[in-house]
Length: 216
Ligand SMILES: N[C@@H](CCC(=O)N[C@@H](CS)C(=O)NCC(=O)O)C(=O)O
Image 1 (cartoon, rainbow, N blue to C red):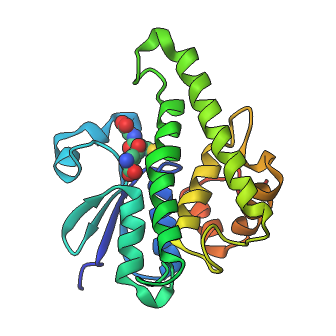
Image 2: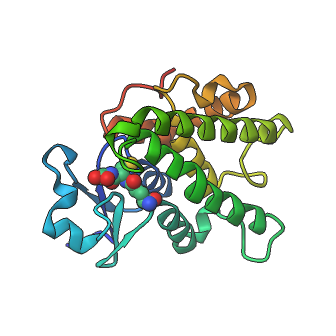
């Protein structure tokens, strides 16, 4: 039997979820490999050969390991253009799409890294101050995105689902245990409600054994 073209190294409920979700949405064959954070598999020599950053997701594409969630989503959209999950190159929505993908990956996602790993920027003594800053940064971004949805748009970019929605929705999920959640913002909350109705998002929760947030 031929190998699946994709092998996703993942840990449930982490940055790999958006890629897992998109593979299910695309309906392509893929294999899964659990990276158990409990036993620090992400720091093992074998895993570091796949991704020297020691982080998930890693997607092995036709035998070559690739990393960075935003890049992987864009790569999958490019490899499966029939799914229409990225605006066409040269289209009116393309610039907006690139801007939002990069903003989410460069600004919002790193703020969450700081929130979840607060000793990384300045050591254990500064955890409270660092987390306060991350909270403020994340909330300011939710407020900005909420304004965008207040305009009546259904999707983050253009008029149809794109990888920007996969990334944004995953990141809204990460706020579920924060004092202020993405869903506390009315227009953003309504958007998250619409995303939660997508069968492939519900399916990835089932496959990763996740029961929180999706049914809220
Ligand atoms: N820049 C990376 C970040 C990925 C990342 O931070 N992954 C986290 C899980 S959400 C991870 O693997 N953490 C394990 C660790 O840092 O030991 C990406 O966008 O893919």
